Image 1 (tube, rainbow, N blue to C red):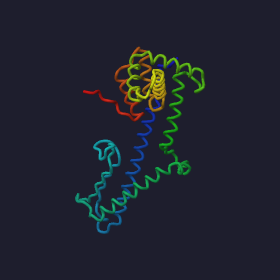
Image 2: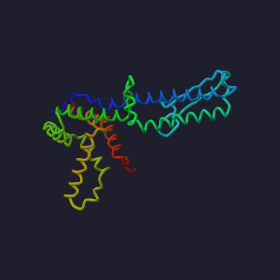
Image 3: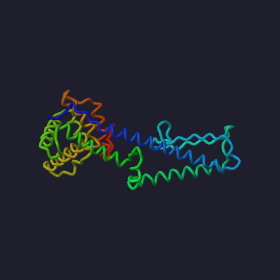
Image 4: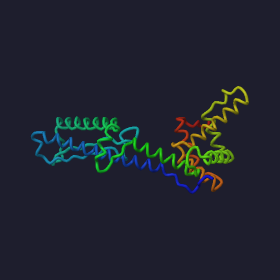
Length: 259
């Protein structure tokens, strides 16, 4: 029996962990950039005694500077009279910023090698590899939980999957979903006989079904199944989310109807 009262959380947890990681990394980068800029002014001759105002923004939302919606570094360096620092100092500042960025890039590539050094810190600073490991385990545990199974080899898992598949192919919303996805994923013209056409459709349906229970999609599939099993239908909004997510996984664009 599929547990419709079970709440799947792995995807939300992953998003929150990633958000916190990005905030921490942005704050660390901003602090390093600020320190680097201040070091420039400490060695800037006549300008070292001025009251310097430094504003640094790293990452975040809002007005974006690139196609990915990421905000770049916005750095304002002025003295107490609100005038810009000399060009030579500005150049030194940019050099320092670039050095910090390159340092962080190298740290990101060597996260695994630095894990032993981080063990002595009071608070462990998790990285993206940790997030991947945690959320993969959460996904597996939650997938087993909805089928009330102890392991992937548990007979309850096999019986539950078969029961869900039979229910899906009888549901009107999922029938439409499978037909639309079949039209986007397979080419019927490659089948030479009716048997080959039937096999092509069956294999494509199986591929879609497996994808629905993958880590990338299951958090949406579960919501759709809960609606189907408790209400007898799935809301258009949920089916639309599921379809968009599935299309993204296969990296295909939905065909627009001809005018």
